[in-house]
Length: 129
Image 1: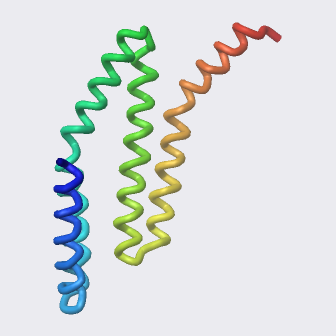
Image 2 (image 1 turned 45 degrees about the horizontal axis):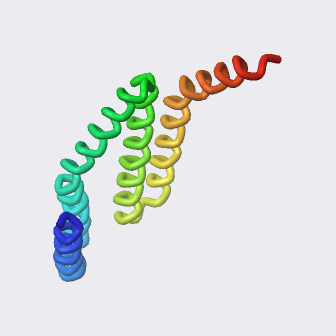
């Protein structure tokens, strides 16, 4: 099971980080970053399967794929932004982490504009003013 791999890698990395942090704190940060990347590599195949399945469902239901792709990109921005912010916080740079979070939120807002406009247009068609 994937969760066993993720937890195993994380526990091993945590033990190594605790030991290494006392000797070379900068190496502990690099190990933490690499652990995050390894976890992403472990789960990326399953994420791709889920995205494929959702893409097929969107096609079958007649949903405009532009909206579906935009939503997937928004979710990706949220996860990548959170990952980057957490890694940055781990290094002690909370101010930079908050900048990553703000940038991710702004990008999400920008990408959501076409969906919001379409939603407003649909509402106006249903309930004319």
